Length: 180
Image (cartoon, rainbow, N blue to C red; front, side, top):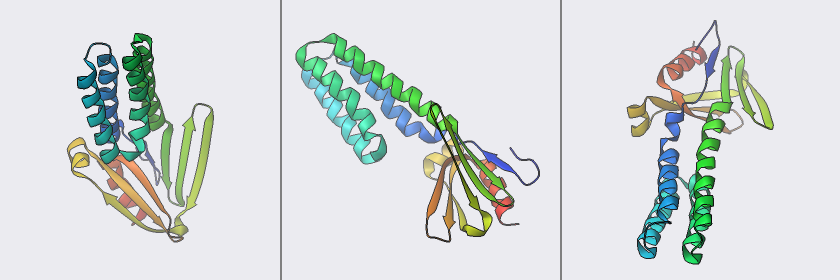
């Protein structure tokens, strides 16, 4: 979306596909804690925990907490804990979706504005164009398939601002705006 020197970028939820898949598997295992035998459930929980640790380190606690609650419910024979774990995992998915939708990046002719409008929390950061040293657009294999890229804004101070989940069309508009 652009209008005379302004590019507004809202990250796409497709960039969080890995976290959403891990959360879906977590929900399935929390429900499975009520019906699977202990060893089958434990093997699935350990495998999911290892996958989340290796692939999405930031999302590991979000997988671990509901699995720990479901495991306690399984061990103690309390189905209510498995239900609670399922609710926790569903709330984490809702949180992820709300968080991604709360972020906006505004690229103006004079610089970058990052705005986060999350329930009960808001923050705005302005970065003048003069402090931007370099802008790179990178796309992983998953990004190429799902149609998004990551924009890395390198500042003269050495800091990097990574904008994940930028739709490809918006990334190209951004490149034109900053290099013309």
